Length: 291
Image 1: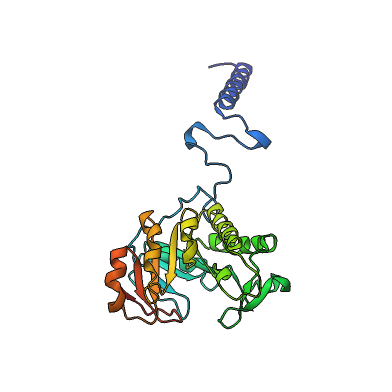
Image 2: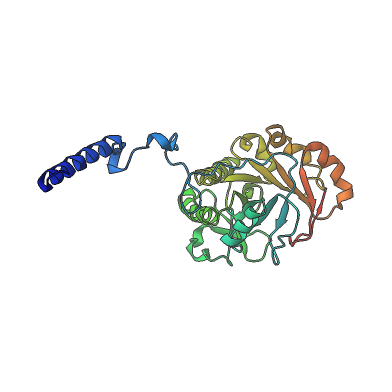
């Protein structure tokens, strides 16, 4: 047995050796005094890569494929029993718990948000300056926005998309992105719409969410590369569904609804085109008839 002073000296020596060994095994700090990636952590994510809600590793961006079934419900109590792998629901009304429930059921969730129109019933309505609010768009409480004012609208839409991301949504359906074709009260040009729509797509992608192009048929050739899927209303009624084919050819889903035509009148033709078609009521409650 070692004398007490020898044991003390031996313990100090072992402690020093352990400290040196531990320090050498650690990865040196990265810039700004943040730890660098360790050898066991795999490849670091790219700068600015969006993380999943609550932190953690970045979520892969979802890319829906042509023909995938879906449900679109914006009014009434959300019916979670519909057997569809994709749900498009109101981003303001629905809670994070609902999105989590959909995920637990193996479904994807799309966040419906209006981006091209002011809505006086939304909680952020007071943040919109009066000079960017134009004519009514045909829906109660809604008016077109001056999409040329990217300086004003970008931060407002960024907050809305932050909400979608924080609730865990996989994608965004930005509505009212064809104002240049309507009587908005502003002198909007096609180039203004392209710039605005591309800004909207980037805001979604920067937050790790895919994004759909809503209607805006004439600009599909220019925008199909910026968007991950399309959402269309009534292309069969107006004989415009062939305009959606650039999305299908690019391997991107087209989520399509008809309100006035019965499913028997359009399903055969839209199935041939590769569209994901539904018959819905105009107020978009839970009822649906899928092709």
